[in-house]
Image 1: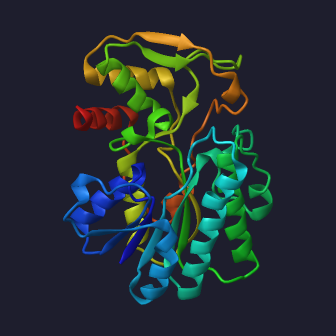
Image 2: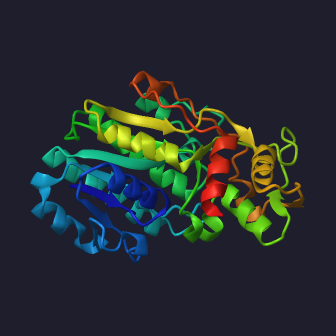
Length: 317
């Protein structure tokens, strides 16, 4: 049995689809949202969040892993208590449960924990250096505080799952993200704008080191994220925090070019100011260091930006 929290969200839906097609696991999804039509009559069961821990206790002997993807991911959310309750304390309850019954625990961290990137994007940090990171928004802080908590638990030899992984996802794009609205990937928003006959809208740069459109991101296709999660599901003897990115930063003009080439349209860009409400929290550069995952034995190739965008558009259209 596999438990997926947030299983009707972006990465969760893609993971569930993959597990349905490639495994014999019984899949239990914990989510407040309605089950998508494509999952009805499939070997998937839904459970409401408030009933989760009662269910876990009753089924603890047959649970193989908990994959914790549920969270408030809105980087503009300012309700600190709401964010901490969902992203920190709920995650900690699941950690404690998996520790008590020795269940594999894989949870979603985020590249937002690295802040402005001044200290780099190295996932091979000891507690002292991990603690120096300065996220730029409450969402990033909630993920960062949980990363610190579990690393400290392991150092202090407190009860921990034998196998656990915190996955720092970078800028994920791909199928099944349309429900995210304004929080969907820039790739999705570009595709939607072009299909509506509109120019691509991009933020101007407010950093003299970067020209408009040359802000850099580590864009990763969602299929790569699913491959990494499935790989951890099928191995043992791991524990730690791991970056999940392509390992190569690309700029927004590269992304626009890839989208327009795949959709066979000319590039037309509408430049707008970055809203002042998020301007001070804006990341101008992200790029995952991936050596730690490779040293663990992961050897699948990651999609290039062009390949990922092209596959996404073929599925979308």
